[in-house]
Length: 118
Image (cartoon, rainbow, N blue to C red; front, side, top):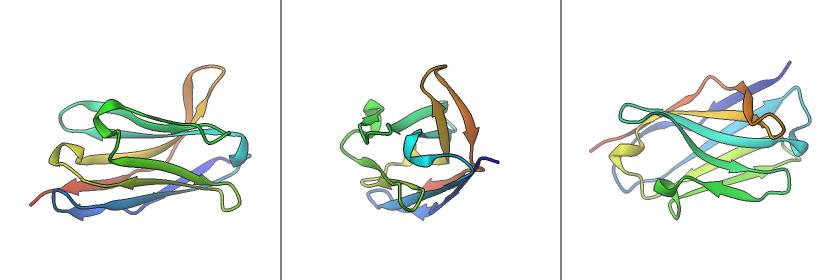
């Protein structure tokens, strides 16, 4: 059974930082393309970042230069470092497994809540 478990969310002031983690199990993590997706009050469901099996990374424009996605295949763990946080980054952040061939997410975690507020 595929399982994705996010952690690391919390309340942070604008300009602050958080590091989100996603522990993966039940599939060959090292071969998987992994994404972070967020649900925000303003934009709804929004793709944030992706990392391929070869560790090539991609970001939505609004987080480029502020967020960093990374993975540790030995630990089956995905991370998202969030720096210079803005109020509009507030939302539920989900780790998702992405099927490159079909262009769809086939597994999601339960999410971790990020709140950016002064």
